[in-house]
Length: 440
Image 1: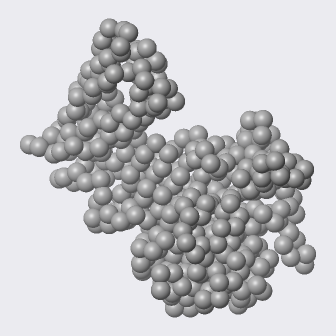
Image 2: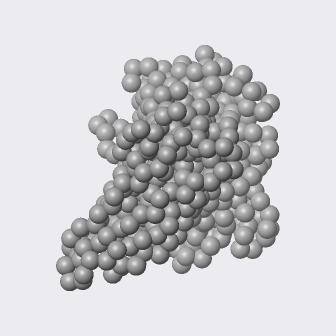
Image 3: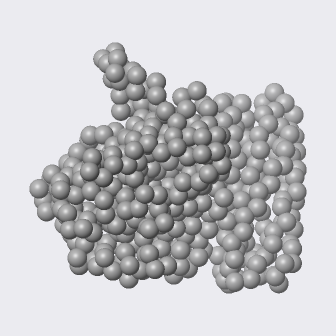
């Protein structure tokens, strides 16, 4: 099976995406769709894209097949029709459903220049093409989102380059029953949800002070228009952002889906302070939905200090009904037996948050791997629904963390697993799940 996703990145022309049009007589047909920007819609009458056609039969290992050359035509009111041609990339077929990805950057000579990306997402020797494999994992990629599916049903959506915020995040995330396991606000407003902390977006990483700048909060956290206080204006001036540079891997097999991203952390003036390689692995075992969230922070620009801040770390905002403060049966429990408010600021190998969601008892645990920075981590877990693994801030004076300076060229590693489960921590056997996690 070969699935091609074509994406054109152009603020002027708009974007392109592709879908499988049909499979006929052993040929896979890919339809290219143009989504014009407002400017392009005014200037370009039409843009026609014939279907791409090529064989679907698997080829021997290391053999190469050339996708047919494609002719593009653009009609512009004031300019004569032009034909745009480029050679598509060579495609390598690999044994054993191995993943590969190629990119081509052919120039397209038209009144407005842009670059066209062809990304080869999935290779296998299956006899038919399916974008949503009913027996395993699959991925759907759009311009600003990547959706991970399992057995054709959504597991999580990775959101990048959202203009409303300064970070990438996962939302929504669905647990083993298919119910959403994160609060919807501020991405979506739902009756009955608590609407505090605008910057709590699904599942995310943020830090109030990396190199002096804040990727935890965002502009909407402080901007009150004419009523914005001087203190809030100071916070706004210190807002930094995460920038998603590229995917290093986007792949899916029967057993798992993998997203590997390269991120930069920037100051308000755009100066880079640190890089991150973020690896997300989605899988399912024993009725549990799991996300391994592995982060490597690299001091690529010189020494960088991670500040001693309460608001920092890997987070999820649980559904309002699950929150302890909702008084509907929500409960926090950590590996050391601390519960609810008593778990805040304490170090533990894992921490679990459970409670009612859609009239079912569901939960999410975060497991902290022994190889992770400052294991066992401190937990910034709140009874109102914030759930954060925070090895940076001093939450308990008896067990301080403190600022940490990452020296030039060095790497800081964070290793965590999210476990989405039915029932509470005991019935979901979170301690057993933790032992399996650390034994691998």
